[in-house]
Image (cartoon, rainbow over all chains, first blue to last red):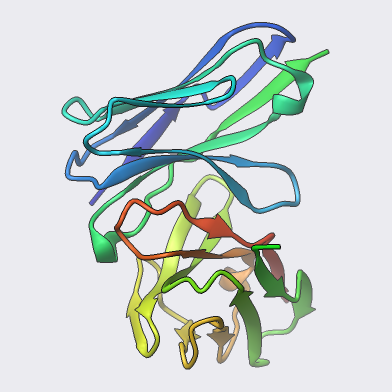
Length: 112
Length: 114
């Protein structure tokens, strides 16, 4: 059964810093890994999807990497802004029926 | 606007009173699923549906039912709710399941079972 760990559980930094959020998973037989953002009182917003054959994906100030063999992914946030404050969730997706398995998230606060 | 819509957003009810949480998507997605989110446990999948008339259990299906009679709708049914089903529920959809398609989530339904 897939298990997903996210470190750190919480992070508070001043605006402008570059950040790295870590995600590890136990079963490397995945189709892809997705990073989501969750704002209070809202659903999840998909940020990046890295296919199992890819090493990284970029969207604006966000860059996600995937090392499937070692069961690790990182989300890099450049030049953080207060609007980046949210909970970030990683979720590897197994084949077809397995769906997404979520980590417990990293609660990020960017201080103005 | 492409979206997944859940109703109600909030509900307080009592043990044993049947309830249905509706989920509808307007993106012509084949795959739909339900998750619950609990403090300290994260998001866990309840049921999923690969396409119309095909549903299957996720990790925590006990006490829930679903149906997929048409592509756009995937209601979650609690026949006899109990306090341990108090949770935040999310519906999600994607074009296909397991085919590298991003999942789209609704805004959530907060259920309190007294």
